[in-house]
Length: 242
Image (cartoon, rainbow, N blue to C red; front, side):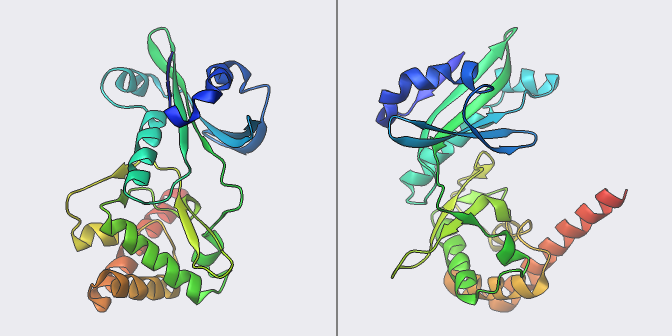
């Protein structure tokens, strides 16, 4: 087993070392599907533990020998985001649990951001808030300017909370698929929007605000962002029908 702990949270070492043995019995279940998220309260902290499912055998070999596991990437990318002044829940630790010499479960531990909501309703037009949409576009332009490319920029992976008298605060989650390129061409930027919304009206406003914030051509941004999103969501519909 490999355990890496953020030095700022060394006081939680005993709890972190016990996570693989207590995860199934303790904690409050927050989400379950392929992976599971549980919330714990330890040492005055509210903590979220994400347990990644056991990979299939080919990926178990790859994650053991060739590639960094998702939990490790999530931890390291969170540190890099904070270094670049892009908000993400503070990383506490990661755990890689090996069985028979190959990676089995892995765990990413971070501070729980319970006051935040995701942007799903905004992206589906269930929530009408042009000011929030503008702030979201400015936020995406901001982290792009910091050299941050979120490859899984879906509505569930951008969280926000309204602050009294201040602008909305955003944070990025589910960050194990991310790049930090030295340069970011326009098409790369636009393609990263593809998972956000199937709604052309939402995307047109978002693209307009984004182009204004990033200093890009509005018409091109609108056309390309709508195109990438249409391709993505049409492809997903086709796969579901098939």
